[in-house]
Image 1: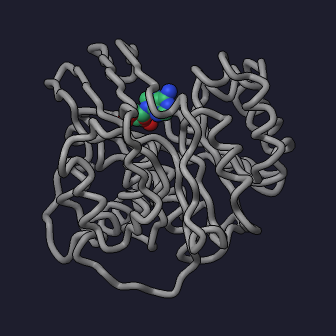
Image 2 (image 1 turned 60 degrees about the vertical axis):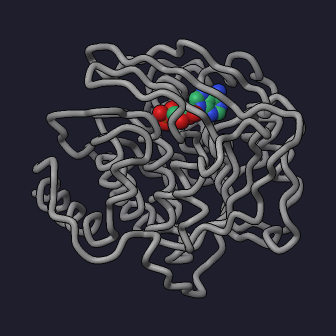
Length: 322
Ligand code: AMP
């Protein structure tokens, strides 16, 4: 698969087509990220689970964003979202006297391995944001990775969502185990990676782990396996999909959130979550994630157009059909 493709057509920001579609709400972290990778490093770059998610979802549908930064957040830091007409930033709170979440990660020579060098929860350890009244009727909801207590707090503010999907991570499964188990009872979908699924279920077999989580949440579960693709658990079946073969990876940060953003964006736009729709949504997640890792932060997504994603999807489809 080619690593680069021609850029043509409209970017997500330019494609201000306010289709009626179904509302997609996201809440999660907004991060000031420092990333060291074999290919280079960025300091104080735009990151955070809900940021990657929103931008990726905006290629497919309108997004309602809810999150908090501190008053230390640099001027213009969130411009890629603020200037994106498909992302409604009404739910952004700039909290006086608080500090923004910060994360510092370092990738190994094998970029599938990474260490967290430092994490400052700051605002993520405080009370969550208030979901604006007009957002409370959202039908599709993604609780991107953040403190599970905050995820539950967000959920309690929503009226009657149709599909609530959550992500989590090893840090929360280990330190907030009870809250993560409680979260599973209140969502009807999960997206998590293979090691997190094993940690959560204490099952070494990832297929068995996925089946158990799908039974718990009584809805679709996606287990991401990085360069090895993903598994979808839906209506009693398991659907495997490989990842796009990428010979060079600059920065995999946010690939999982980008995957989830494209997936949920497609689902919300289609207003369907049957297995056939989910399988196509996951294919979109796979190709959009393969784009974000070609550069640091959101840089690659910022110059991507929906047509580029569709072109890569068509190429991917040829590769996986036999
Ligand atoms: P991923 O590569 O999919 O794990 O996502 C990385 C993004 O998640 C980075 O941009 C970080 O700002 C953010 N992040 C890292 N650790 C946490 C955490 N404990 N809670 C919420 N977000 C986090």
